[in-house]
Each structure stands twice: as C-alpha cells, then as structure tokens.
Amino acid sequence: MAVQTSESLLELFDSAPLNRRYWTSFALLSGITVLDFFDFFLIAFILSKVGPEWKLTYGQSGLILYGGGLGAILGALIWGSLSDVLGRKLQIVTGTFICAISAALIGVLPTGAWMLLAALRILVGFGLAAAVTPCLTIVVELTPTRWRTLMTSFYIVFASAGTFLASIVSGALFDTIGWRGLALLGIAPAVLGILVWMLVPESVRWLAAKGRFAEARDEVANHLGLAREQVPLPTIAPVAPPRGSLKELYANPRLFWQTVILWGGSSTAVYGYYLWGPTIVALVLSVPVGQAARYFIYVSGAAVTGKILLSIIAPMTGRRLIGTVFGLMSALCLALAAFYHDALIGGFPLMIILIAAAAFFCEGGFSNLAPYTVEQYGVRMGARSSGL
Image 1 (cartoon, rainbow, N blue to C red):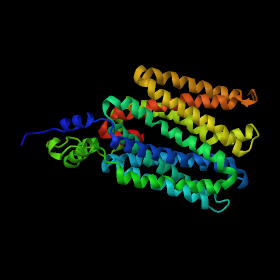
Image 2: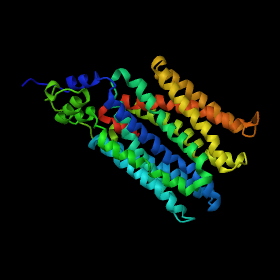
Image 3: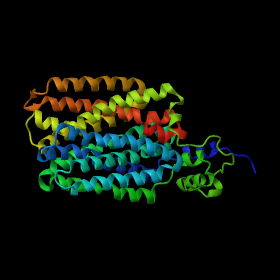
Image 4: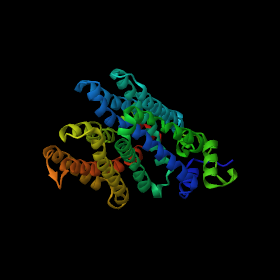
C-alpha cells in the first residue's frame, strides 16, 4: 500500500464547493450563535426591570452582569480545550443545552432571589462560550480556503444578530409578557442544538489531525458526493495530534498577547454598552425600560451593519489596516457618547447615535478578529485559540 499523508485528503476537501451540506451546517451554526447571544443579552433588559423591583444595589447588579462574563471565560477556556481533545460537535451541543436551560430557569426564580440569578447567569455565560467557541472553530475549518476570509468574517455577524433579536423581542414583548416571559424564551437554542447533533458533521480537519482517517475520509466522501474508494485514505499518523493543554497557547508569546490585548479591549467596550447600556440609558434619559430596549435596536442594528460591511471589505484591504481604523473610531464614538449624553438632534438622543456608531466600528472589528485568531493558531489549537 502506498504511503499517504493527510494532505491529499484535505486538498480534496478544500476544493469542495459551497454546497447544500455546507450551507446547512453554516445556517445551523449561525442559528446557534444568534440564539445563544439572544439568551446572553436578554439580562440587560431583564435587569433594568428587576433591579428597581428587587431593590438591587449596584454591587448586586454588577455581580449578576459580570457573572455571565465569568462564566463565559470559564466556558471558552474549558470547552475550547475539550473541543481540541474530544471534537467540535459534542461541545457545541452540550454548551447550547447548558445555555438554553439556564436562561429559561431565570423565568421561574422567586422574587428577590438575586444570588440564584447571578448563579444562573454564570451558567448562561458558560454555555454560550462553550457552544460558540467550537462553532467558530468548525466554521473556519469547514470553509474552503478560497472562501474563508469572506464567509468566516460574515459568520461573526450572527453574534450581533442575537443582540439585535434580544432588543427587538424585548422592545415588542416586554410590556406584554413581562420579564419572566422573556426569560422563558431562552429555551429556544435547545431546538437548534438537537438539529446540530443530527445534521452537522464533525470537522474533517480535526478528524485528520487526530489520526481518525477513516472517519475523515467518510465525511469528505459524503460532502463531495463521492464513493469512499474515490477518496484517499491517509496512512501516516499525525506527529502531534491536538491536545487539551492551554500552555501551548503561550508557545508564541507575541501571538498570545496580541490576542489578549485586542480581544480584551474590544470585549470591554462591547459588553460594557450592551450589558449596562439599557440601564444607563433608562436612567440618563428618564425613559421606561421598553423605550430603552427600542433604542438598542438601533445599536444592535448598527453592529450587524458594521460586521456585514467589514466581512466584504476585509478581503480587499487586509485585516490589519481596517482593524486599526475601526478600533480607533469605536473608541472615539464611545468617548463622545459619554460627553454628549444629554444632547438631542431633532429630538433624538445624540447619545444613542454615538453608541450605535461605536457598535458599528467595534463589532465590525470582531468580524476581522475572530477568524484571524483561529487562522493564526491553526487546527491543532483551533478551539483553544477561539476560547482564548
């Protein structure tokens, strides 16, 4: 038998068109991202209601909001490691169920149970990151190289689509079904979790990197509509299959700190205006929660627009230049939003316009950053780098 590396198999897979199997997987993974982020950001609108009702202090509110962030950090790192060891698909499904069930349980909490709310928020954040971390990784690995910059940048749009959906649903239904009804809608991602388990294949690149060549060949054959005999079967075991060690992320210190600084700065801005934004807007502008939620439709809509635009122009300009411009503009717009918080333009708050502009630039930048990080680290550390 001739000796075969995995390169010929992966080259054949990389030549695949964006066929129905690809679009089915892309749509389901995007749907997971939309609904998990919907669950994550609903708390911004729920807390602006229960905070005054439960007479929560700033510290208690902060613990509830930051609990989601703490959970997300743990979920990203733990599930990122497990995804490199055990595969992408299983971690997506389990993370989605953790997020959906925890979010829905918020709707049945006893009045005043802020500690239980904070605990559930940790689990919502954990589940979100546990699902979305391998989602991003598998989208990068599933997409052919010639389409990767465009499609993986476009995929990041769906995170903002989740916040957009949370704003729309909260604005439309808050007065009708109340905060408990909104929270119960959080079970929705579980449905897509089941569909992902049934319809989305495991990452061919991960299977090959783990030396599971027969499974990788079967997936390539199914994806291309070929007989198994027409697809090469690698015979040389990988020298260094993916492991779960987070220490490997620091093998390249420059890349590690680049990732931490760029993502840390961007995430601080985005989660700041989304999680605290509705409460701050309701207080500063003296408007009810429903109106604050409707204002954030503009913010999340601007974020979606920025991500779509960035996904189109990044292949033409390169990631570095456009990332620099968008980062600087987002910082400027946030600073101006704070300074002009009481100004109006035609009766509309300038503060909202500037926060929306910041969302356009900052979250547009996420479309640039997310696939770039995974591409830089490669398939061996794909999920761990996504988690980082």
